[in-house]
Length: 64
Image (tube, rainbow, N blue to C red; front, side, top):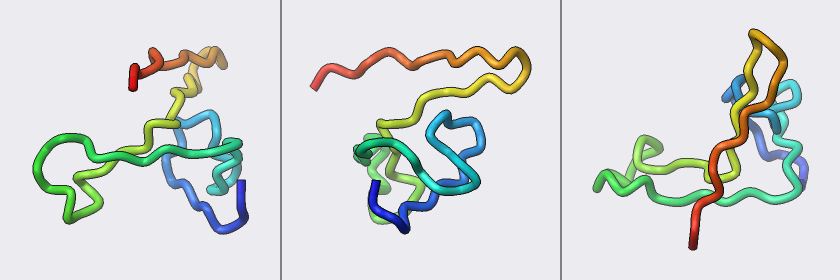
């Protein structure tokens, strides 16, 4: 991942001290008709990190 990709989603397994360490990222519209703001986008690379038990629960893969 190029330097400068910042992430503030602490629940993501790819967040390493606010740096995204994913090999690549995919950002898309979330379909809510407000794509003109950050609220209208989502990171499809996000994978949930469970802080309670340390187990990583992967989101289901999206079909393109």
